[in-house]
Every structure is written in structure tokens, then in C-alpha cells.
Amino acid sequence: MPENTSSTPNQPGRWVVSKFGPPSVLRWDVFDPLPTPSNGELLIRIIVGGIGQTDTVQRVGAYPDPRFSKPGFTPGYDFTGKVEELGPDVTGFDIGDVASMCISGAYATHIVLPFADAIKLRAEDDIIKAATLPLNYMTAYGMLKRSEAKIEPGSSILIGPASGGIGTAMAQLVKAFDLDITMYGLCSPTKFDHVKALGVTPIDSSHAKCRGTRSKESLDSSLEATEGSAGQVIAIGGMSLIAPDGSGMVDPGSFNMHAYIAQHPNMAFFGVTNHYYQAQRDLFNSDFDAILGKVRNGKLDPVIGKLWRLDQAVAVHEALLSGVGVVGKMAFLVDAELAAAHGL
Image (cartoon, rainbow, N blue to C red):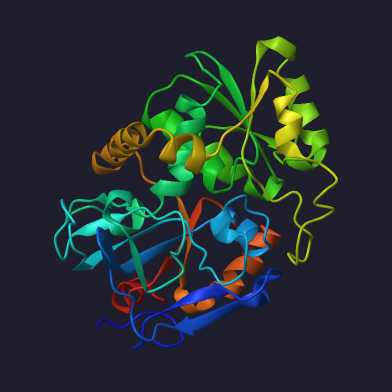
């Protein structure tokens, strides 16, 4: 078995949320034995594991999905890897095929999932760039093209925050698909250069009321910025209600974002899992292929802010909390040989 970059390089394993709380609640568990695929499932060795703010929301117990309602799960939304074992009745995949996708469980050396939930890649695809697509780029594309926003050519949008994984993805997709949209973006002054390079006009987030968070104040200010009926506010899950130390939520019952949005016809919530991946799977897969096509032809080069070893998960979550230096997508290089080639 190829070595991995966890604390047990010669043994497979996974990170587990041992209890809801700060980054220190993440615990490394060795697979003993390695899970085996059941009917219609694949066993995949993860080579690259995606990192996102969703992982932090899951860790504190705030992610609205039954799979994450109790501790004991493995976070991690997206990955790329190679198929190592096929369960009965699997079609369309062979051992050695490169695959992507996930929803949960990517903070690991291996994952078992239904073959219908995996997306087959070409052997020549860039395995690191492909791992950036399922969460960040599909969320951004869904907001641009499949949400209630109905953004027409010649429109303008305000992205908040613009320097993170989804904001960066959105700016890149606007350019890659020639959408003819003027972009403004909220970020700290230290990230102005990054945002300008994406073709976005930066706005200092410290002086803006609509800071790209999901607080009531921010949603109201964002709606005001659209000039009432002239625009639309599309919200996704975020970090604004997480305590500064990441130990939990700040007054979780004080503000119900979903109920509040439902009261405003010019606001909508977009969830890449429920509204896109699960509700419109064929469209999701088609859009994924279109985005991957842009990567293949060079029109889209996903921004990867930092690569990490799998044994650095706690440090990763501390970085996600602080936001310092976090731009674009981050990812774990799980395969030790690949990590060594990138200086990790």
C-alpha cells in the first residue's frame, strides 16, 4: 500500500470529529480493518482531499444534515483518488480508475461510497486541480447559473467574501465562461492584489455593512445594496455564527437565516448539495463536465492557496478560523509521493 501523509504513513485511517468543538476535537483513527465496499459501492484510495469552510461548520455541529448531527463522522467534502476495489453490481468503473466527488468523509486515506455518487475522471486530468471543483467551483457556478439570481450579461455582482475559496472560484468562472459580468468583491486590504488579479474591484470589508456573512445585518445591507427589487441576494452557509475560538455557535437560536430569507422575495439560499447535487444530479454532472473542460483546455486554472499534509488537519482548521493568508482553495495531499513532489 502506498504511503500516506498522516501520522500513520503505512496504515490507512481517517480524521474523526470526536465531539463538537474547536479544532482540537479532531482525532486520527486507524482503519482496522480497511472498509470493504458493499453492493454498488467503490473503495477509493484518496490522493487529494479538499478543504473548505464547510468542514468547520460540520466540526462545531452546525451543519444541517443528519449525517453530521452526532460526533463520530469524518469531515471533508471533496476529493480525487483511485478506485482500489469494486463491490458487486458496480458499472462504469474499473480498478485503477480516477474518481472524484464525496459530500463527506474526505479527511481520510480511503473512502467507500456508492459508484453512482462518484464522477469518473480521465487518467490525464490534473488530480489536484480536479479536487478543487466539487465544492468550491460547483457552488460558485450554481450560484451564478442555477440559483434564483438569474444574472444576465452586462449585470454586476458583489461577492462576499471575494478572496476565499468560493469567491475566488466565482470570479474565475465568470472569466472562464465569458459571462460579461462586472464584479466587485469584499475582502481585507491585504488581499486586494489577489482579488484585483481575478478581475474583481476590491472593497474593504472592514468598512462595509454587507460583509458576506449570514447575519441579519449583513443580509439587510446586502439587500439594500441591490436597490430593492432591482437585484437578488443569494446566500450560502458561512462562518459568521461560529464562536471566535471555533468551539461552537454564537447564540444558535438567536437568528434563523433560512426563516428570515424565506420572508424576503429578493433573497434566496443556495445549497450545492440539496439544491444542485441531489435535486438536479444530471445537470450537476453536466455542469461539472463543462467546468472540468475549461480546466482541460486551459481557460480555467483553479487557484490553490495552500497544500497541506493529512497529519496537519488541526492546523488547517485553525487557519480556517483565523482566515489569515487563506485565499482560494486549500487541499490535503494524502499520497506521500505526490506530497514529496510538492515539497511537503
